[in-house]
Image (cartoon, rainbow, N blue to C red; front, side):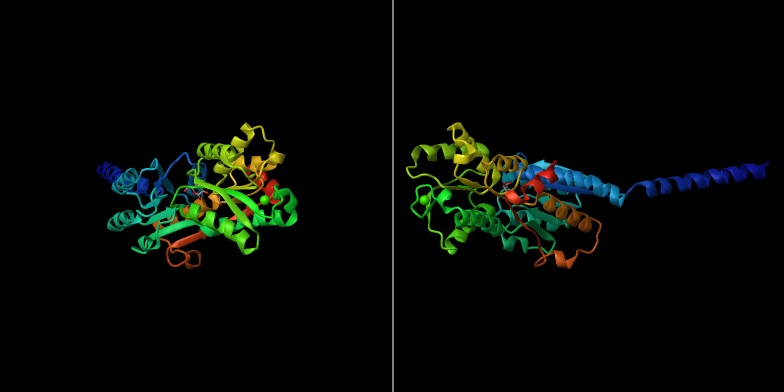
Length: 345
Ligand code: GAL
Ligand code: CA
């Protein structure tokens, strides 16, 4: 009898000892990722965050881990963003991703991350090189800014070569254009503006800039700029370069309001390949765009986050100069439009 009771007691004791160990083993490993974006309502940025959320769920399943992803909207304010990063660090994030508001202000964030020993990944808004070089665990994921400009320039160059009479509306042999620019100082705004035109000039196309202005990537602002130009400019606009699709769509909004049908609109090109831009291409108002790979950027970021958080080795061939993960842009023309529209639906 006593022996039996002792055995039962021993069994209960063993069970009690085993239980916490057992439930701890069942908990999947968890990581925390904090993401701060300059402006959540930006069309391209919101596409990246949607992909990130979706892919984090898929990665949880694939790896059998828990990924806590927090996204903060910095609403265009660098001090708000700095506080958001502080909060992420206080809450024990394993990796921080920053779509920095002011790309010249990265040093402070790199230093904060380094002090906390938490890797930091910047994306889409490229910090200056010296800031990224402050710490070996600071990274940038993005696309080469000049390439989108070159591709835009090539889209227009091809049209000029193949149907100059259509493009050169006033028949003076010169291409009259306007430029809708993104935020001042943004690497993509500066480089797309420069390289789009440079591509035409180096190919020997005579160009004349009728007007340019910033519209901060936004459709509403671009529409206003375009309305002003339609009122003020004397020469006909033959090409509209927009640093992104939302601004190209803003220009189209202004033209539609003037009662101009798609076939009479200037040759308009954007960048990003957002769903509404592809729809505008199908309709014929937008003539071309350049795909900014939101999905690829989200994929690379998440891959980097997981590797850093789980202490896995980073593939050196994917990281240039120890800090950069580059993605490619692709031109969107009538030829590959159908395939892209298919991918989206
Ligand atoms: C660009 C993109 C724009 C805007 C901007 C924000 O790469 O083409 O549409 O999202 O980033 O930083
Ligand atoms: Ca002309």
